[in-house]
Image 1 (cartoon, helix red, strand yellow):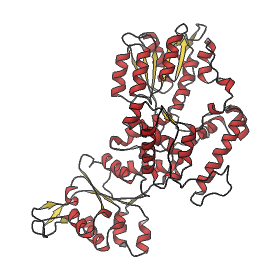
Image 2 (spheres, one colour):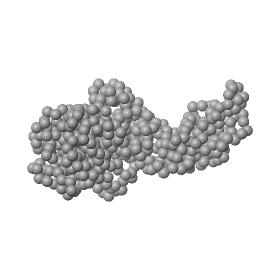
Image 3 (cartoon, one colour):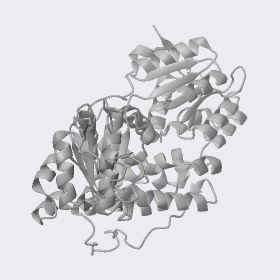
Image 4 (cartoon, one colour):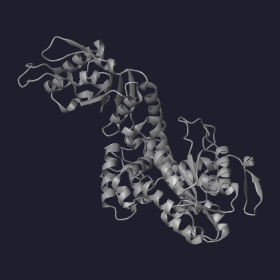
Length: 515
């Protein structure tokens, strides 16, 4: 039976402590989650076997995945090989110290939070690790409730990064950028379609505005499919005139036309055993559609200048920037070709309809960018993030990448304070009753709710309990909405409550967010 001690040295049975909610499939209102919540993976670093056993049993009982190591060197090896969502480390370790371990983790894995276990007398080193970027600290002897509370708060703040790692594992998106990451229910349904259709050979049609991540969806489907080890052959149908497009797709024999000195396999033939991705399919002519339709139906391709039909075993994914159904009505697309490629439709939302994903996408972009690591940039200021969330994003995720790229290069500190945006911005309902016609009703309502929450937080000094009561909602519902809109209660707390008093009670209570 696992035990730990409280501040007064009394024994506590770890099994008697209520579990930390981490993998509950329903929220406070009983709504079933669309996608299973990831189970956080915690790395415990301590050379005291008793402490390791107690923390391991406590965290396991609380439904976390736990790994225990006895030195900082072992911890760094685990971080290199595994996805770790939280590190809990003692300051005094054999080999490299907890301070040095914290420094190395922050430099190499800045999105992994750290809770430091420290002795009350070791204030100097505690201050050092906080300056280095540790998320919290617990003073020995500590209670089960103290470590649970600290863990819960730290993991809530790190939730976007946990979701990123989880989705990356699920989608195997070592080939992807963060455009495949989302908190939006509609996008979660897209993820489910991807998982379902990937195991088949069905033809998929992806529709969405430029920059919404259509190629990322195509890559995810391919790499999750049985043909994932085969080639992924992509071609932009809008980039070539009909004659060149035909030779690129179908290939040709020697002498088929002027300049055809050697036989050449086309994209369709090269996709054998893999996937053919036809981007901007809406730009193909009616005659090209007829030729592609024959290939899709017969699964055979004939090179230009040849009469020999070559069998091809491939999956076809098409993508379009416009609604192809409208082109059929306009006579610009053959109806038989449309129905042949529209077996499994996937429609991607523009970024302006999934604003709650912007902080998640920003964090994921930072995670991958080499300049961010070199400059040790840790985030975006609240005013800058608000501007990103309010902007209309006509260029979608691709435009977001470009904006972040500029901001990273021009950043002078560890926090990005300014972002350069275009002129097409979302109106702010709190300051202007006339809302831009480009704003959807859903986006306008969300902005109204966000401004209302800001006013309530300001009125009650960031106190969650009072704010929730004034809004007529539960604390968990309010907390979820604050995460949705990127609002931090600390930004609205009175300055007096933010002063850290270095006492034993402040170590075990104030840092845990009690007020």
